[in-house]
Length: 298
Image 1 (cartoon, rainbow, N blue to C red):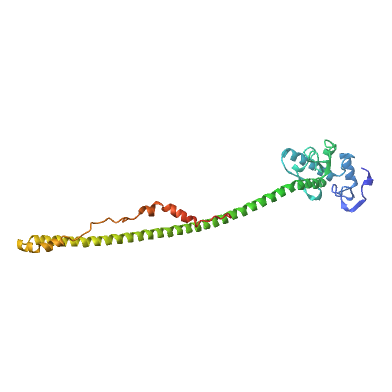
Image 2 (cartoon, rainbow, N blue to C red):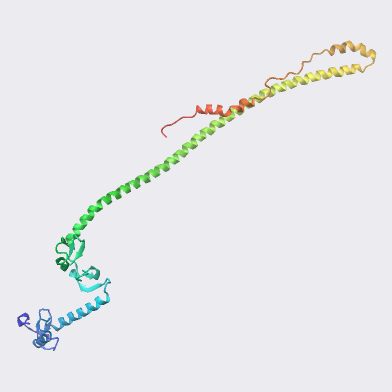
């Protein structure tokens, strides 16, 4: 290492090797005196780092990296070195082949690559920077996302329509239940009125025919009393002595000629059950037709 690469001696700095004054400021930022620097170059060679501190750090980093690679081979881990911006790079984010941070994106193979990969197997491929590839991929995803968003909106609209239809069906069913009950209430009322009307007609017929039978029974009772009195009077006259019997015979004989008509059966005395029951359903159905209306709106 030539002397023009070194700065002038610094009186304020002590050599970390011999603790002597007059140490030189090396390009790496460390200080060594001329004697320690010459000794370091003799030991490490002119192509060496030229600084014992830098050499020790490089040696230590190399040993630690070898140990970590052997211990965590095939596992995700964080590398102790920092990348630009102070970010820590995970081992899984490094290029598997060259163990370097990817700087490019292969558009053909759709994978992250490092600079060495681009110069080797991806030399003829279309590659872009990570930023450009990110923007391009995002544009493609946005374009692919648009029909999915439109379809999602269509499905949301269909779901909303289904919910509204379901609510309308519920209200429609409730209204229909009220209409059914209302119509049946009218039918029940109509049938009730018809029942009352038919029962009233039956009661009137019963009253009329019962009155006729009562009148007939009263008349038969009177005729029975007349016949009983004639029989009793005749039997009494026949039990008298001969003089008395003959004396009253003509009078008694005249009373025996009382005209009593034979009982006559009353036509249609019984209730006409067939009239009330035989065509009941049909007659009610005919009357019901006058109250039934058809509404095509439902």
